[in-house]
Image 1 (cartoon, helix red, strand yellow):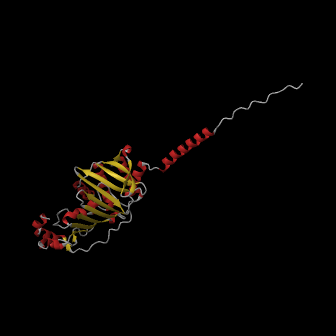
Image 2: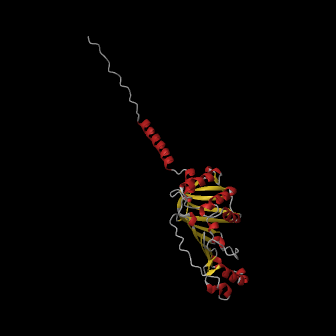
Image 3: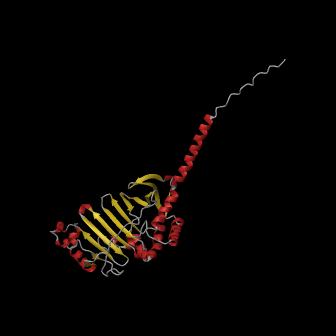
Length: 310
C-alpha cells in the first residue's frame, strides 16, 4: 500500500518591487545631491578666484552712476603696470558738461567738453571748452599747478588706479604675495551665510556683503604703488583724500568669475559701479595738447566769476 503524500505547500512570493523602486529613488536623490555639490559655485572659491582675476587683468572698463545720474567711465590699460594708462569721461547731464581725461605715469591731460554756443554770452567760458590741457609733463607737475574743480583726479593714474579695488597684470609671485596680504590682513571679509544668488548686468552672480579694512587697504595701496612705478606716498596721499565705505555689495559673475558690480551707500548717497570688457578695453591714443596748464590756469582765473555760476 502506497502511502499518500501531500503536495508541498507553495510559499507566497514577496513582492520586491516597492523596495527596488524606493532604492532607485534614494540613489537618484543621492546622485542629485552629489551632482549639485559638484556643479554649484563655492562662494569662497568664487570670491578668491575673482580677487586673483583682478590681479591678472590686462585691461578693464568701469562705469559709476550716482543718484543724480552723473556718471564716470574709466578705461584701464594695465597690461604692463609700470606703463599703465587710463582714459576717463565724467558726464554731468544737468549742466551739459563732460570732462575727458587721459593719463599715464608721465603725462596727464584733461578737456572740458560742451557746446560752446551755450556760452556765447560769456566768451571767458567759451575758451575753456574743447581743448586738451596738459597737466603732468614728463612725470612732473607744473610749478604753478593746483587742483581746480577736481580736474586732476580723473586723469591722474596715481589716484585713478588705486583705491578700494586695484586692477593689474602682475606676475605669479606678485599675485601670491598680494593675495596672501589680503587674506592675512582681512582687507576684504564677508559672512558666508549672507552670500546669495543674484543677477547683475544680465549675468548670474553671487552677491557678497563685503567689509573693508581701511587701514589694511591703505597699506595694500602703499605696497602696490612701486609695482606701478609710483612712490607709496604719492598713492597714499590720493587714498587719504578719498571716501572709503565700511561695507560694499559685490556682485561676482558665476560664469566668468569676475567682479562685475559694486554697490555702495555712504550716508544718503548711493552709487553703483559696473566692471566690464575685461582684457578687451582700449584706452585709445595719447592726445595732443592744445594748451599747457600754466596758460589754461590763467584763462580759468580770468573766467573765475563765470565759472562759479556754472
